[in-house]
Length: 384
Image (cartoon, rainbow, N blue to C red; front, side, top):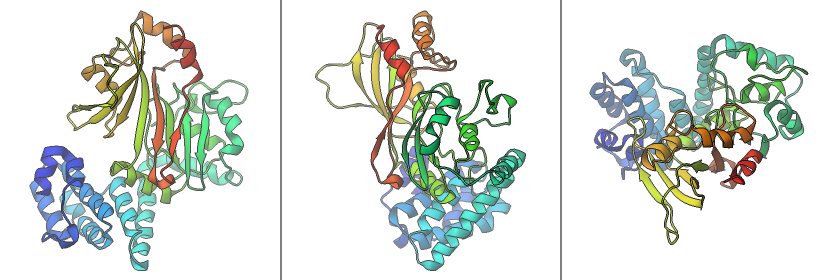
């Protein structure tokens, strides 16, 4: 049943199965063995299925099943060539937190494994960033350095929420979340301008505490494309990072975007509820809901909520389903004479009209956090 559900609708279909794993006749050992055997030549799918099963353990709060599944997977990983990843370790960690003291001790050991794995995979870039952090003074709070971060990243940078473990910011358009490889252009310079500083580099420069279990970039739980502005969650601790990864995987995080699309999107004035888009992105199940906020002669201001988290999902659904690309999007047909004039208001290269307007995260209390539209949007919209 689990395998057929995955074939039908990938991890989301597995998560939505009406199965009580605690009373299920299939044991964790059998589940791992059958999955590895059935998907021996499709390792990525095998890992996704087992991660979805661990997700079910989180939703059903059955740490004992998650613990046994984790042990069986670890035992067979080398032979099968199917290794647990950050999502795996995050889900197990999060689930075991619901268990007794012994389970919670195991959870801490799994988090330690995630840290060591990240350090190994991150290579020299990670070692250098960790060494630099140790040489600096005590970590600071984001609120105390917001103006400094605005000097580095631009005036549209905002601190939206901060706790001891989590930071939610509004990322300016044109800023990369991180650089996969070290680059001299990404170094913060004094008095010489900052050519291409990433969000990660800026946060490290002001000595903000960031999680370490993402091997690609410290603190980054999810990404926004360089040209996209708005709400972004940053983990300040490894504990928070693991739980946030779990919540994103379980589709418990709600995200809404505002985008400017051209040509205008057809919308009936009496339509009150958002319309569902159910269309694959890069061959994967993808769902969004949209509604038109305002229409102009040749463009529409649209709100889109992503129900799944595929790469470029909003951009693809706008261009390929609504047939109205995001204005300024160079990848999906949103570039032209009129769009170029609008984008000029940003004053920043690599910008387009896509903004992560709000985010709702259970880990932070479930409050809806909103990011104001970038200042340059108002200038552009006033010309329509």
